Length: 215
Length: 275
Image (cartoon, rainbow over the protein chains, first blue to last red):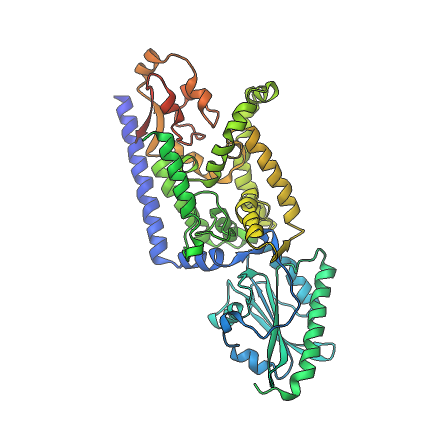
């Protein structure tokens, strides 16, 4: 008798748990954007620190964009006054946490990790238009170049794109380089140095080509 | 069809379904087992990664905490830890390494280790891993278990390096420590049968309590018949990959419902039970 009552209680507990869990799970899937959040934020964006690898850093500028996507308007407009530095990050990303203070120190900018931030930075007498985008808090307009400039289709964070100008078949066009992760080097000094060198190369190209640039 | 064959088939099919990325299937679900979303072919997200993102540096994203827990809870209430035995690709890997571990069990020092009174207590490490490394350090410091995870190394790092050998370099901060942990993981699974599941798997720790209330479970037939007919041959306990004393088992949190004890019992005194 006691055994039957115990069994009944267990069955009641099982059914209760099952209904609660199934209801809550269905409710979350129907009523919240958690599915999209997991899909866009975890499955489709590569966590480079989870991977324990960095994409090989190539410092060569290219005219190519991913799938030949057009450059965003605000990039084309701002190129008239200086080079563009696009910095992409996300909340839970140790690699992003390593790179954030390095970039802030290099460009003398200050903001919180979750902010959307942009500023005209005076860098050794020249202008950099800096855009910081945390993709967990960004508008679609701000995340658009994340896809456009991910030429190698890495889809990983952190990602840095520096857009400058280059000459191609008689036309001055945007030319860019995209770097990922902790830049494939070991120390913060080396990371800073990689960024400095790329910025210098970008300014050299920009200075050579700005006279013929029409946005 | 024999239980173990069905199990192999289930594990292979689920392994394939976890790798549908190349045909464009990238869902917003979390796997209910251990598999890394940084695998080039991954279909879904690692539940631990979702939990970590949910608590990272005290950012309380309740949806990302609740979602994987509910997915695990759903399967947990239905089948307990059967996911570990029937679905998890790391379980499949450990089935492959089990013959080596079983042979090594005959070595006196390893045999002695298995009999040490501390051995059952080591199983609590997985709960410490779950609470300490997945939740606590992630919330307080920002260090994430998945940065050094040996399963991420096996299913994410190694396939990426094999598929794209010239496109990636080692991240010195995470790669070498993760490599050391991965080597230790390999030693573990070759020396202790289901060593990862027994001692370290944080997902196993999440599933384990559900064995107490799951609808499906492995149990002895009614007590009277069992006491009368059991030959005390210990075949069930000897074959148990989780090292459970099956003759005394009552909804043991370690049971992965593999069914080996059910199959081997000469008197059919152990069975899969519903409810």
